[in-house]
Length: 87
Image (cartoon, rainbow, N blue to C red):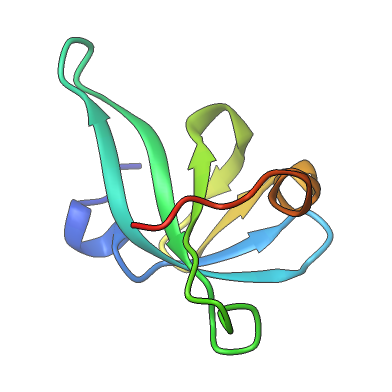
């Protein structure tokens, strides 16, 4: 399956256990390998009270469909342990 950047931007992001994290807002590409390195996730209104984006490394992505991206539950734990970066 292939998805364009237009299809990825705005894609809903959930953890494996079903927690909504927000939606993909940016793609970070490694120019040497031509691969997506990270996905920037803009939190929804409930999680985004502080306006901080979440960076998800490609190794943390479990599945991508045309409806959603599913990531490891560990992403949320890491978010709580480390300060998120402002973008």
